[in-house]
Image (cartoon, rainbow, N blue to C red; front, side):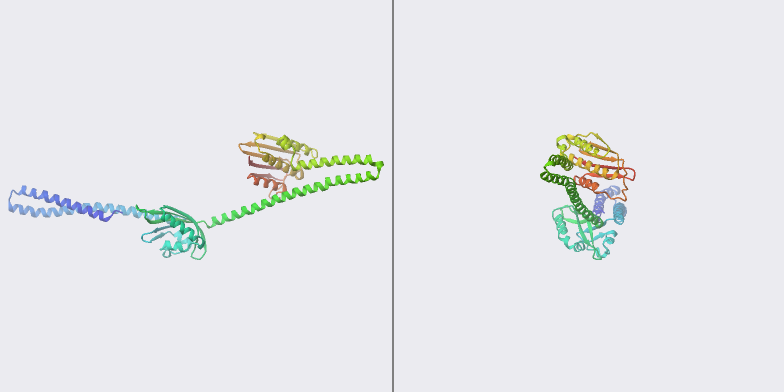
Length: 421
């Protein structure tokens, strides 16, 4: 809106200029028209005064009308802006607040009143109302940040805090405001909006808790996998190697007391010791393939497949695409070997497959591995993943990789993993 005082000054100046010009010009014209005729001069002077009042009234009317039109236009624009401001406040899902620091007047939209349960009258002294309803544990921090922004010339402020509703409960709020200052930098107005992020904050806490639980489950699964490996190693030592060595010991004892059978018994001992050595080599290879560092990943896999074919007739095909073994770190090579070994153990134990296709593909820094068989498959909705798949998933999570399993009864199983170098 234009300043009414400036309009009054303009109108006064217009009248003053008109009066001066009229006085200077009209007196000279009167003398010229009357030719020093006193009676005529008085008559003209009389009508000149009337004419001056008429022209002055017309001037004042014209100028006032123009000023009023400008004022009405400015008022209309201001009313339209205020109407849009209120409509936006009503339509917004955010709780809008507008606080005048000079008059302590506050405007709040209906959303803010509904969000916290307060009436418009209770929100008049908005600044003190806001400070008093901050959560006690958040108040010092939030007010300190606000006061710092106000004192240090800040123009934008935002924070997250807990805020008390009228019923005494607290909501988690994200608040963002604009600090308006005059030319001298003094704050005269604060405008902002509050968002209720209670549910979002709750979901974030639940997600953080779920991640913590998942970490504990992952650690537990790793411990279970290690325990299963130890149990497997213990069974191998007890059931195979321990039994073989027990027989050797028994034969040696018989050879000592039966000289006539010594050669035969020692020959049998030699055979059992050779078998024991092979069992130990097999066990050692299952723990850490000796060819992995000596012969590389692919050759170690081919050796693994050859060992499997000795006990099971199964066709294992390997397909590689842009796969540079030399560019892969030894730890990642061992990871690939273990995943394939683990899944092949699953295939041999559960699927009854006679064909397995393994695909290895490298794209940039990513490795894609798939192991697909033509076995019996399983119902993914009814059957939970076994220890083998759980171990593979744990290995993937340790390297921030991804794992996907697709299977159905009679459709075999397709295991896909992806991780970075």
